[in-house]
Image (cartoon, rainbow, N blue to C red; front, side, top):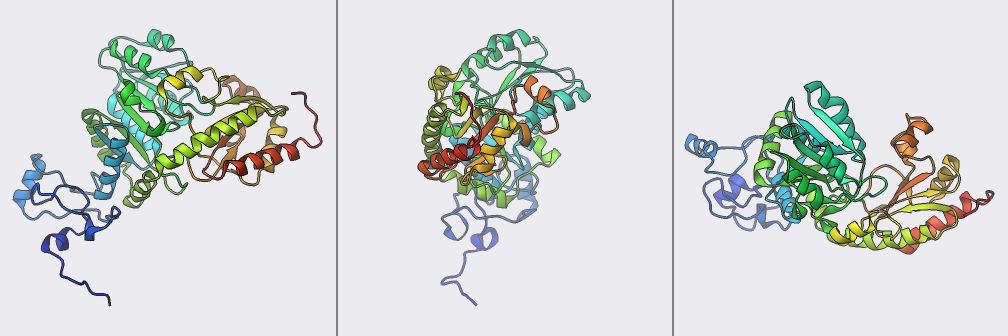
Length: 414
């Protein structure tokens, strides 16, 4: 059996997996377990107190440490601190999924009789939660079209509107919310907060808190983790609001597993490298698609043709790793393009190292008719490409051959 070259100190023996920067015995700093370079995975559902005096100090707020797994975990806390730093936030709370994060945040900030204003292009499950679920608890919601902040201002019910929710960029058309204007509208409403879903942007491309938002949502499943191997979500913002959300997380139970938190932390180490690569690749791909004779329209904020291009230039550092486009023809032509891809694979989600492709009409809105989909702006000829970190020349070659195969026997005017 392997042996240690030197005996472990009593502190390391007792707390060898601790990852926080504060000791349970006081305020002296402590190292990671066994001087590990990476953050250890702490697999414990409960934590030991040396004596009742220490327990009393913990409940009085003199000690920052763990008590029970539903309220905190050292590996999770380490990941939260990294995510908060990325967004220049005072604090962050991690959850078992992006939906667990946003639903808990909303429930923490509104109550019966309150009102929410939300842009109609927010993530469809968030819309479903706000429209179909919150009404049971007498919480009203108003949906407004994207790109028209003046309609957000008109929708405010003074004394009742407690939350404005917007997404930037959005799925699948990559619309950009005017965050500073929304923040100004929020400041004009009594006790109202602004929550921005910035999953598509990441903190590399956009920091909503610096633009006036109160809270930022990330589905860390996507770019933060970056490898299509974990589910996670985060809420970032000022410490007071995040504390409210974290407290409710302890009640509702949507906590993140420490193994998942480790994977998120690992992904964060390469976040900037991956996003910069995806930004560059996506710009080239968008330009290639816009010039292709079988493509009728491309949606990417980095293109001058995008309706929010100027706004994206003003408040973003990069335009992201998702490109959506409509092809000539209809559902069959779009399906042929998708099926002919060899490098890009058919799957939902985005933000990973692999390039993924899908038809939103099938992947997310299959249960609706064509007419119902078009009524909400989802067309059968729409394709969404989530760009990975492969060589961009390979991705371009894959798309080029896919178009050749898909349109080999079909003639469409450009």
